[in-house]
Length: 152
Image (cartoon, rainbow, N blue to C red; front, side, top):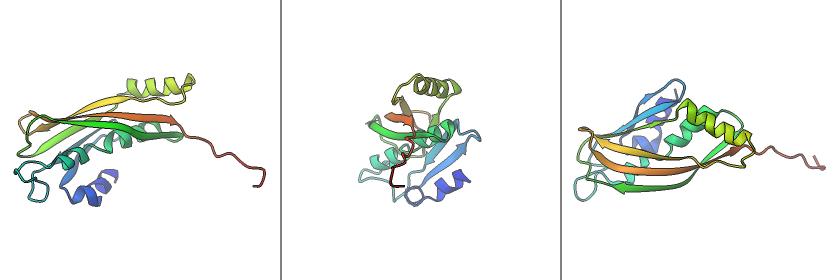
């Protein structure tokens, strides 16, 4: 159901971005975007904003699902390097291993106020050539508990 929601989410539907696979345990996801008249730039290649958009929320969404309730996860920073023009279908894969999830939990359990995992995602064309590289830094912390005031 989550995959269907993302595929009909207006910003994705409007740019031709599709989630092609989602692991049942949210450990990985694959996304694809075909080159269409509405997502190409003046040079006939993929619009850079669409290349970034196809990679924007997925690491956060997967990590929230893997960590479960009681955690906040946000994007802290991102950069994109355009390596070559995308002239056809492009795709990207996102994943979090059990070991990475354990490391984040262990750091928070040991008293870290927050953790900032970093990931690099490759956007590939149909021949497996790198089109773009997106580097993301996330921010993870335990969810703050609501404090009760004397007035409540």
